[in-house]
Length: 118
Image (cartoon, rainbow, N blue to C red; front, side):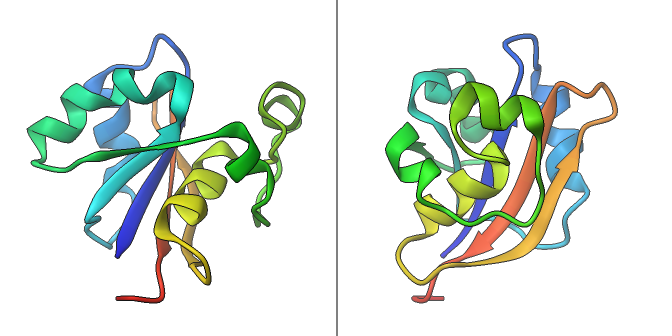
C-alpha cells in the first residue's frame, strides 16, 4: 500500500493538500495524518475517493524520518509529521519513497511511504 502522509496548519485548504501531493509522482492508496486532525483531511480524501488513516502521536513518534522540523518536533514529538504518518499508516516494514514536500502556501506538507504488502 502506498500512503501519502500529511502535516498541516488548521488554515490548510484542499488546494494546500493538492499542491503538496502534486509534488510527488506516486499515486496513494490512502491518506494519513495525526488522529486529532484526521477530520480536516476527510473532504480532500473523499474528492480523491481515498480513505484517511488516523495516526496516534505514539505511532508517529516511533518512526524514523529523513527530514527535520524543529516546530514539528516540539509540537508533535516527531521531526516530520508527513513522513511519520505516512510510515506509520503504511505498516510495519514500510519505507519512505518520497520525503516531505511543502505546499506553495506553506500550509501543508506531504510525504509518501510504501508498505511491504505493495
